Length: 76
Image (tube, rainbow, N blue to C red; front, side, top):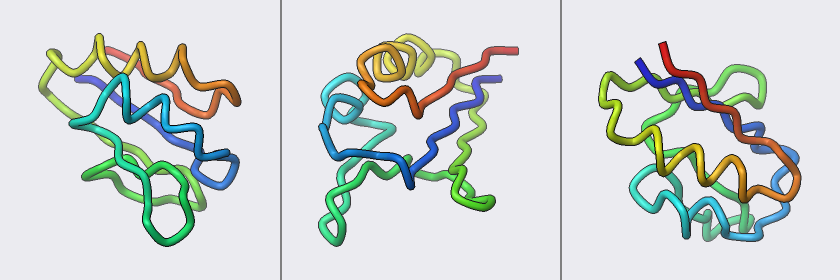
């Protein structure tokens, strides 16, 4: 399983995550911050749990590209 977490409140809207993983992230038209698609919100932490390991590489690139380091990725 791949677990991706986004701490959305701290997003600065740089768009790097969308460039690296466009199938998992998009930018909100309301506030210009990143949205982790198909995620669950728990107190500002948006979490996506996926059995599709093929997303791991792109979301890890997004996490590394994020200048404020608000994306974490775990594989189990």
